[in-house]
Amino acid sequence: MNPERAAGTPEPEHQGPKPVPYTYHDGREDYLHVGRQGGTEADQSEALIPPSAGVSSPLQATALPPEAAAMPTEAAASPAPASALPPEATALPPEASPGAAAQRPQQGTRMGEIVTRGLRTGAVLTAATMCTMMAASTLKRGSPWASMNAMATAVGLGGRRASDRFDPVVTPAGVAVLAGGLLVWGIGYEKALDAAGRRSSPLTGALSALGGFLFDELVLPDRLMKNFRAKMGVLGTLSKYVALGVASAAAPR
Image (cartoon, rainbow, N blue to C red; front, top):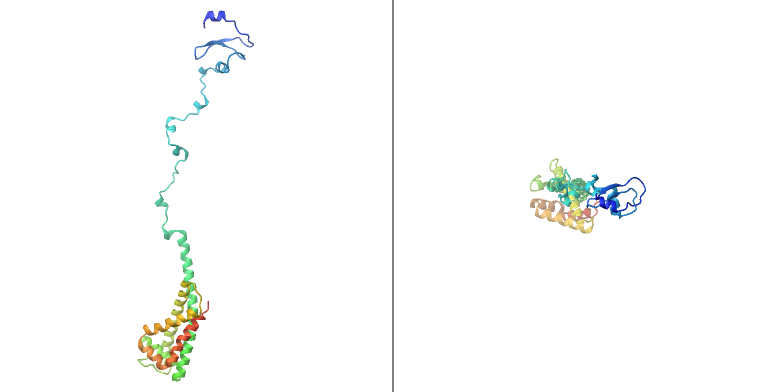
C-alpha cells in the first residue's frame, strides 16, 4: 500500500473492528471495513466476499461437462427405451389378430344356426312332398308306394319300370333318397335366404319350386321323370313342385 496515500488520506469514520488493508482484483487499494457505509454496492460485495476466497458461482457449480452439452436436444429430452422392438417384430399377421380369432367362433355359430334351420325346413319339405306324391300315386295307380318306388330309380333301383307294390328294398330306398335330397335342399334354401338377407315368403317359395323342377329335368336321369309321370300322372308330378313351393314359403324360422 502507498504510504503517502495512506498518510494524506484521512481515515474514514467507522465503527467496529480495526480496518484491514485490502487490494481488489482490479488493483484498487482500500481498507476493509465491516459495516462500511461508503462506496458502491459492487465495492461492498467485493469487499465482503473477495473473489480469491475460492467460492464459485451457482452457474459454475451446476455447469454440465462438455460431453453432456454436446448431446443432441432430442436425445437429452427423450431417451430411447431400452426394450424397443422393430415394427416388424411387433406386427401381428391378420389371422393372429384378436379380431380374427373372435370372428371364427362367431362364423361357426352362425353356420350351425343355418344348418339347424335348414334341417327343420328340410323336414317340412320332406313331409309335404312325400304326402303329395303318395296321394298322387294312389289316385293314379291305386298304391301309395308306387311314387316311392319311382323315386328309387334315381339311384338305379327298381329297374326301368318301377313296381306299384311295396318292395322291402326299393321302397325304403326311395323314401331315403327323397328325404335326404330334401334335407339338403332345405339347408341350401336357408343358406340362400341368409345370404340375401330375406325371410321365407311366397316369392322365395316360388323360386324354390322352380329350382326343384329344373333340378329334376336337367340333373336327374330321364327314367326318373318317366316313372314319375307313369306313377303319378302329369298333374300329380306338377303337384309335387307345388307342395315344395308352399312348404318352402311356410318354412319355420
